[in-house]
Amino acid sequence: MLVWIQHPRPSSRRFLFLDRDGVINVDSSKYIKNWDEVRFYPDALDALRFLRQQSVQGILISNQSVVNRGFTSIETLWDIHDRMLDRIRRAGGDVLAAFYCPHRPDEACACRKPSPRMILYAAGIFSIETAETYLIGDRSSDILAGGDSGCRTVLLERPDSEHPPEGAWAGRQPDERYPSLLEAVTALWKQGKLS
Ligand SMILES: [Mg+2]
Ligand SMILES: [Zn+2]
Image 1 (tube, protein in one colour):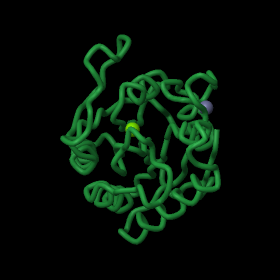
Image 2: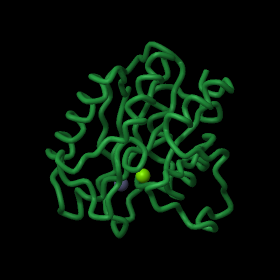
Image 3: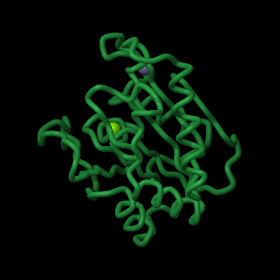
């Protein structure tokens, strides 16, 4: 597990777990291998600014098997991370921490989603009550990891992305579904679910 933490003691007790690819930036079947391949969803930058305005701390929980598949290096993963953070901050948003799994599925590691390990690890560091916290992701592995960690879950069904097939949930269903990150966070906030 690769871990980046901006503040070990965050300034508020409002947290939101976020998948990265397909949520913040456009995902690719060829993986995100360098900064040139990062395409932000405009609404994601707006959503991260909205979260910061409400003092909700976003925590990235992301599978990045692109590293151990040999398509990019850990150094480049951090370069992508640094530049994404810079872009997010220039748009008025921020991220509290990021947890990346670099492993391939066949390595059978403990951290790769659908394992809840990265979420539980983050929850331990920041003393987060997962039962009061949402995870937003675009795949069934996000919903399984979120559910198994005790979080409430939102499935993002962006119009341009492939949605997980029904039945991919192993008995779990997302608690809510939204077509964009901005709609998800503003709806959750209005309903008092992020405070
Ligand atoms: Mg994703
Ligand atoms: Zn892993």
